Each structure stands twice: as C-alpha cells, then as structure tokens.
Amino acid sequence: MRGRLLILVGLILLLGVIVVVVLSSGILNRTPAPPSNGTPGVQVAQATVGPTPTPYPFVRIVIALQNLPRGYRFPSNIEELQDIVDYTLWPEPAVPFNALREDQGGVEAVLGKIARTDIFREQPILSTLLVENLTEIAAIGSDAAAILPSDRVAVSIPVDRVTSVAYGVQDGDRVDVIISMLFVDVDEVFQSITPNNVTLFTIKENGDIELLEAIQGRPDQTAFGSAIIGPSERQRPRLVTQRTVQDALVVHVGDFPPDGKFIGKKPTPTPVPQGTPETGRGTPPPPPTAVPRPDIITLGVTPQYAVMLVWAIEAKLPLTLALRSATDVSQQTTLPVSLDYILNEFNISVPGRRDYSIEPAIRSIRQLLAGAEISLNPGS
Image (cartoon, rainbow, N blue to C red; front, side, top):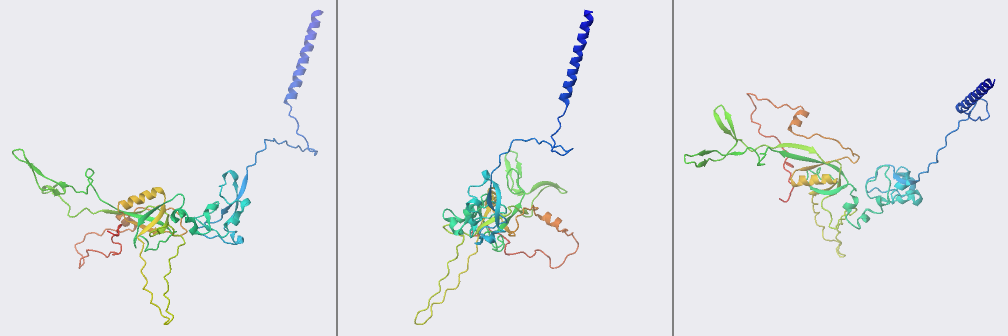
C-alpha cells in the first residue's frame, strides 16, 4: 500500500513538471503583437531610434560661375553679377581663410575689382585673386611673378619672325612648343660621326710598323676583291619634328622693363612741338622710329618642361611656337613627323628610275629663304 502511494505521488510530480515546461516554452516563443493605432487590422511599426548625428557646419562662400581670364574687370553693378558669381555651401573647416564669405560681405567684395590671375568655373574666389588695379600687384616683386600661375615657372626662349607666328604672339596668349631635331649615326665608342677613318699598316722585315694614309670608309668584300668603301659626302642627318610643351602661358614678349613692371604700362607719347607766338610755326616732328621686333619670349610652363626647354636651348635646337585659340585648353597627342611619316600620311610614292627624263635637269626646288636657317643667337 505504501509503495503504491509513492508511485502515485511521483506521477503527480512528473505531470506538474511537464505542464510547467510546456507553458514556459509557449511564453518564450510567442512574438509580442505590435501596438495598434486604433484602426482594426492596422499595426504601427516601431522604428529603431539611433544616436542623433552631429550636424556638420557649412558656410556660404562666393564662387565663379564661368571661366574668368586674367585682367577681367567685374561689373560695378551687383545686378550684373548674376551670371558671373554666386554663393555655394562649403564645409567650414575647409573654407580658405581669405575666401569671400556671405556673412563677411560676400559678392559685394568683387564689385569693380580686377581678376589678378585666371579664375576657373566653380572655383572659390579669394580676396588675393582680386586687385583694384593690375599695376598695384607689383609693389613688391615683379609683374611676371604676380601673374604666373602657382604651378608654373617662367623660362625665356629665343624667337624670330618664323618661330613667333610672324610676331603675332602677345602677352597672355597660350602656345604650344614644336621642336625639331637632326639625327646622325655615330661610333658608339668614339661618339663621332661615322664612317670612321681606316688606317692600313704593314710590318716590315725588321719588325717596324709602317702606317699608310688614313682612308675614310669601311672595309668590305666586293666582286673585285677586298676594298675600303668610303662615303661620297658627309652623312646626311635625319630630321624629325614633334610638338612638346602644350598650353604654355605667354608671360611677356620681349625684354622686361628694368623695374619688372610691364602690366598696364603705356608708351610715353612723343611731345608735339609748339609754335612760336610770332610765326605760329614750330619745328617739324622727327620721323617715327621703327619699333624693334622682339627676339625673346617668356613662357610659363611646369618645372619639368622648363628644364627641357633649357636643354633644347643649350643643344641649339630650333623651337617654334604654335598659337592656340583663346578657348582651347585641350591636351592632344601628336605623332613625330619624319620623312617616313610624310610619305605614309600623304600617300607619296617614291618615283621610279626611268631611261628618260626632262631637260633641263631638276636639281633643286623652291625654298623659303625667310627661315631656311633659324639662328638661336642673332648676334653671332
């Protein structure tokens, strides 16, 4: 009897444990219902709220709406600035200290000012880019350094009528530099123009060496036996021409004034002779003096290109300028031009040999006398 009672109590305890486990599992796995907004069947989703981001400070500064060339004068009327400058938002930590901010005057600071250098579209306008008069920027230093872009250096090259586009290049223009080179074959050891001089010698019976007169040419085997083949003339160099520097800024044409100030300077007018009160006549003015043509030009180029131009000058290579359009800022790749390029590009065939010809014989063609030879040192 006692054993049955214990078995019954054990079963009751086991049944209680099972009920507790089932109820606990249902509570843990049940997903809570989202709160309702009062409308039957519509539940309101709860968004996860993260930390509130710290707002990044922005300020309004003045920028250019179009490319403005060096020397551009801004209108004096603020209504005319609508298509020239405007405000834009800029991160305050990245705003240059000399930028024109809206809370510090804004666009009114550009009224009537002159652009000291080129200002490009969407570029922030800085107070250091504006001057009242171009002549004022050279109070310390030269005008050339004031108008030179920050990534350029100035270097001067010689020019003449042909290499300067018939003296048509002026201050502020943009040019390309074309270089021409002559190539010849040289001996790798002697670094002298080939062919070399060949000196024959014989050894006498007493052991002495007898040197014969040097002959220019090369030893070769012919149908008539061993021979030294010499040239009929000096080696003809091979010409190649290529465009090198592109979009170089013309800083100044000709010599700079002694004080370095050349922007805005006007030539001194010749005084008009005044007549005497008695006759009303004066001494006739002297005939006008011919203005000397410039033989040097200063370009603004990158530091590496400046080194290249100095090397070309030291090597006495002819440099020719090609004038670019004022609106052309492209960088184009060109092919070096040689005799092979001319023949292939323009489909020129080398004429064959015939058993007839014309009379008189054609031994030369017309050449341009002005520019047949370009001297890099006019004084020599």
